[in-house]
Image (cartoon, rainbow, N blue to C red; front, side):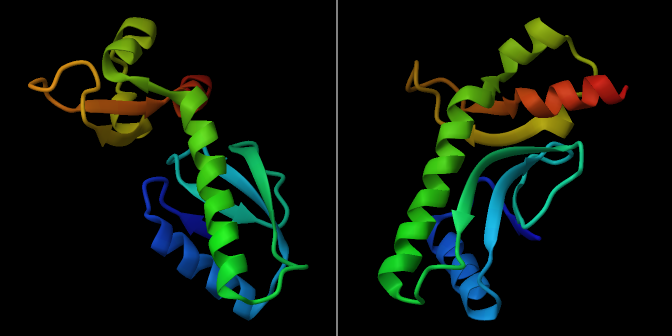
Length: 137
């Protein structure tokens, strides 16, 4: 199992893929860990707290810089497509779920406010992580 921070840069993803290719290239499932919101690469998963968002096929890829860059871009695209449907802002979390101590558990990232230049930054939260914690409670 390989853990990747959701907000990591493309260089970090390239290094992770280089390491995975040099040690033992396998086919990995790209998944989101609902306990902390991190992205993980696993071979097999039976845990109920993972959501699969894609797949990386490393077993049939040659160890070249071009292939490593392509795989890192594919991984970034998988994460971005998941973030588009799962991230919600703080005001939406409070209005939808109330303040039940979920904000600390589901926090993912801070981004510049797209609506106003002078406003503070927006905190984004993963709604799947919130749903997981609500089911657990």
